Length: 191
Ligand code: ADP
Image 1 (cartoon, rainbow, N blue to C red):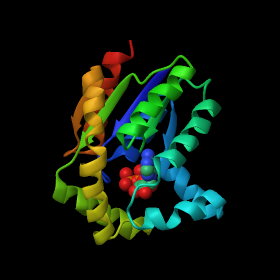
Image 2 (image 1 turned 30 degrees about the horizontal axis):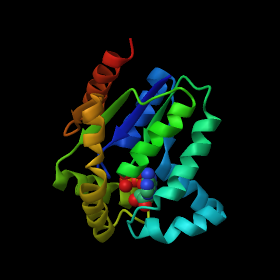
Image 3 (image 1 turned 90 degrees about the horizontal axis):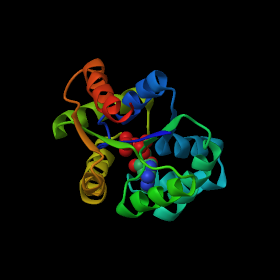
């Protein structure tokens, strides 16, 4: 399998690039944000549990999100590979992902870390909020999410750097140019 972690601050372009990767390489795209928003929309018990936390810009608990991922990984064990979008967001989640994949004799092949300059991130998220009406894409929550990303999530990059499977990709550019950079990085590990 080809297992990719796509990483970056809110608004860095993880979802957009994941959809392009999904099509080109025939992988399954697992977006924890999309899964959680679908649960909220369905009004499920899980959705009710996380709705306020997400609207407020905080992370949901490691325990909850790891259990969710465990199910999803088992469900897609016959896929050509998986793009993990929005997971891991903490060190605990990164370690749990390795453990879960190891149960299926799998591992993460590469982490693609997208970066976008701070003011541009805020601009892109405000635009997205205006179009999608996402409850967490308003200025106060955006600032909080970026702070939480810098404090709790960005350190996860070190975990993958140490393993030697880290690729930094600047996304201060067009979608197509970024995708070209993404493909170059993937093709190096997908021979
Ligand atoms: P973005 O990358 O724009 O912040 P996502 O759609 O990936 O948006 O996630 C939306 C929200 O869902 C997050 O702010 C958080 O509350 C919750 N969430 C998603 N993935 C995780 C995770 N791995 N751990 C904890 N919370 C998560």
